[in-house]
View 1 (cartoon, each protein chain N blue to C red):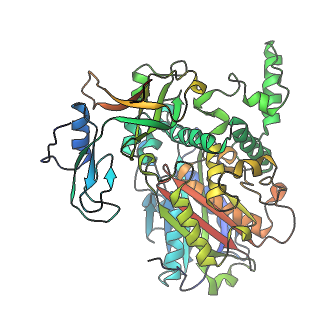
View 2: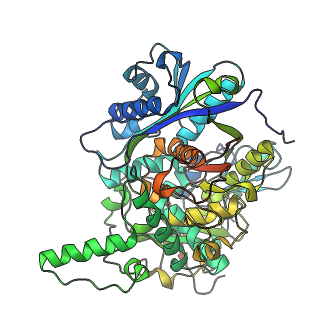
View 3: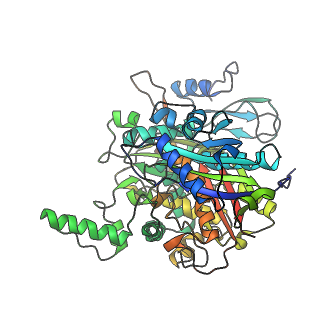
Length: 144
Length: 421
């Protein structure tokens, strides 16, 4: 169980901070129970504001993906190009919400081998250059 | 609680003009927009005096980033001699000028103005492709950018979800591309002037001229499946699934219904207006549909008292081939998952029962993002007035057409229904 730090504001900055600490955190509405990843401070389901941090277990399945050959300058700087594509995708978390993330452990040069519904687990991509930790998921064989 | 919108007074379109769309290294936003403006004035059947224009609403998305100049409302108001009349820039990513159109319509309907110029402009080609991709991605959510998504990437991901859910394949995307390219040579303003067969022939000729091995493709699909001819951009999307980087401008003249007869005997009227906002990929309820498109469409249909079957032809925001499939389903032209079969059967061809993107679409006409929304409406105007030339939808009973414009990854969607009475 991840220790909650309820002092942090429910915003993108704190979400990124948690990623750096290798925690995938969302927020839960204590009124209607709706769950949001990344966190929201206002519940878009019931429009109340009594939300609290909610840790995710980091497991899910692949809901959509793409293998990108022409990336933005930041990805090109990391060595990705036409001959070295990378995979990004949408992962449906066990708790219900979806997350957009880099997808690791797949062969982005052979997209036909990547299958929607694949079980995934969270990994955190840290950079040396001080840029924020990137949320990623990698394939798992066991699923659980 | 939903409210059925209506215009307090009718609004008519009485003139329209656009620059050609394409890559123009020696042109800029001011001269592209001035060309569109001059063409618009010339298109008004009974003439229009620029001094009668009350205001300008202008759509522009990224000129701040691409040509290091902002404040385009004022800049262009000066360029076309409209100053000191008010000019307002409207930004809604790739839907910017459809929003400008909507603001112009609402201002006239409210009785505040009688004659309004609306338009859009974008000057994209002076930057590298990577820079353009980065600039456009400013309209995606930060979460998507952090995950490495580009725009083609987001639509590629939607395509994999669509494929998985409905059993569609790249073959279905190719049908969209081939159809759009068949319309392109019929549009003199289009960036690409060639069918896929034409592209194949010119590639073969070039190889022959260079003494290189001449490629031998059996048909268009074999060409599109050849990774040398059609490289991957963001799986499953390849080069020919993607709209190009473009420069261009477009504008049109809106007037109050009661004075439309002073300008033309053949005005086109605004019948339905819809606009909606959407969420990013992570928060979308459905990865094979744009909630904002469905909401905007319902708003416009309700306002017009019309339904999808009444729309005789439409321009839809085909920034990528998969987008056209999603939109023709979200707009109710075809059932969810049935769009790919309809396209395969030719339903959306120029001579089909529901012509889609007769202009060649964003894919072939070009996609100078801020100008696209207006340019789509200009295509509908030309078709309704029977002035679309070689790409005129067959038959002489066109009365209702529509345009769907999308910004970002579905964050802004509009649906506008125009009619001839």
